[in-house]
Amino acid sequence: MTEIKIIKKVLAANDAIAELNLKFFAEKGILTMDIMSSPGSGKTLILEKTIARLKDKYKCGVIEGDVSTTNDSVRLQKLGVEVVQINTDAFGGDCHLEAEWIKDAALNFDLDNLDILFVENVGNLVCPAEFQTGMDFNIVILSTPEGEDKPVKYPLMFRESQVMIINKMDLLPYLDIDVKLMKDNAKKINPELKILSLSAKTEEGFDEWIEWIETEVEKKKVPLRIKVQEKKSD
Amino acid sequence: MHEIAIASNLYKIVLEELGKNEPITRLKKIKLKIGKLTAVVPEALKFSWAAITKDTQIEGSELEIEDIPILLKCSSCGEEFSIEYPIFICINCNSTKTRIITGRELDIVSLIVE
Image 1 (cartoon, rainbow over the protein chains, first blue to last red):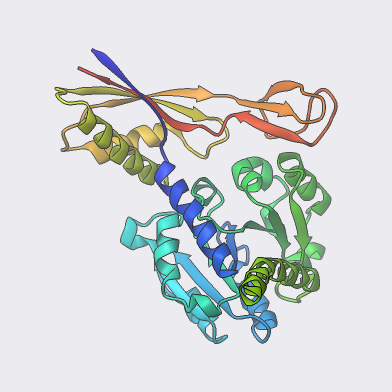
Image 2 (cartoon, rainbow over the protein chains, first blue to last red):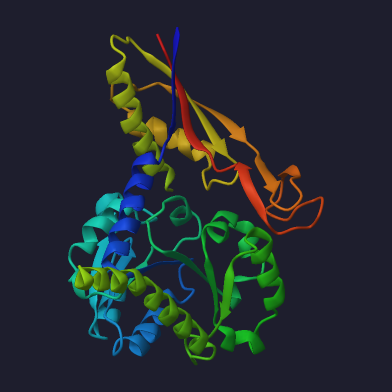
C-alpha cells in the first residue's frame, strides 16, 4: 500500500475562476453583488425595487439563479434590464451557483456599458456560502419572520458576507422577533458585517441601501477614470 | 445537497492525480480534511462519493475524513483559542478582531493506493 500526498483544495477550480471573475469585472469597472438568502426572504422584490430606483442613473444587469422556472427573470425583465437566467436543473438541480456559470452567463451582457451586476443566487443559506462566485460583495438577506437565530444556525453564510439586509421590517408589529438579538447574533459571527434594515414592500429604510450602492458604484469607477486620464496625458 | 458538486470536483482531482502516478491497481482510500466551519456534511459527502464513483474505475474507494476544529487567533492580544459555537469574539480580551486559523479546510490530503 502506498500513500500519495496531494494537499489540494477540493474547490480549487471554482476558487480560481472566482478570482478571475473578480479581476475581470474590476477591469470593466462593474460593481458586482451576489445576493443570497433562504427561499422567500424577498431577494427578487428587493432587486425589483432597487433596480427601479437605480436604472435611470446606472445600467444594471441581473444573473438569475433558480433550480427551475423563469418566474423571477420575467418579473425583472419588466423593468427593462438585461436578465440572464441560469436554471441549475440542467446541472443536476444544484442548490447554488458556481463561478464558471457566472463567467459564461456574463458574456451575454453588453459589459462595456454595464455599471452594476446583481447575481440572485439560488434560495439557500447553506450551499452558496461554500462556492465563491467572485463578486465584490456577498450580500445576505434575512427576513424578520425567519427568526433571530439564523446567523448562528448558518454561520458560514454570515461569515462570508460583507453586507446583511434585514428585510420585512414592516411585519414587526405582527411578530415576536427581537431585531437587536438578530443583529447581535450576526455580529458575533462577523463583527465587520454591515447591517441594513428595510422593507422591500414599503421601501422604509431603502434610502440607505441605495446610497450605499451608489457610493460603491462610484468607487469602482475611480480606477477607470485614472486610467483614462493616464491615456490622455500619454 | 452541494456535496454532490463537491464530490464531483473531488473526482476530477483524484483522476488527475492517479493519472500522474501509474501504474496503480486500486484506489483504496482518499484522506480529506474538513473544517467545522465548512458547510459540508461528511455523511452526505460519503454518500455522494459512492454515487459518483459507481461503475467507474475507482468504485469502492472510501473517504477518510478528519474533522478540523475552528481555531481563531485574536488580532488584538494574540490569544489562540478554539470555538465550539460560532462566536468570533476573543475569549481573553473580548476583541471582535479575530482571524480564522483552521476550520475552513476542504482539502484533499492524500490517496491510499495498492
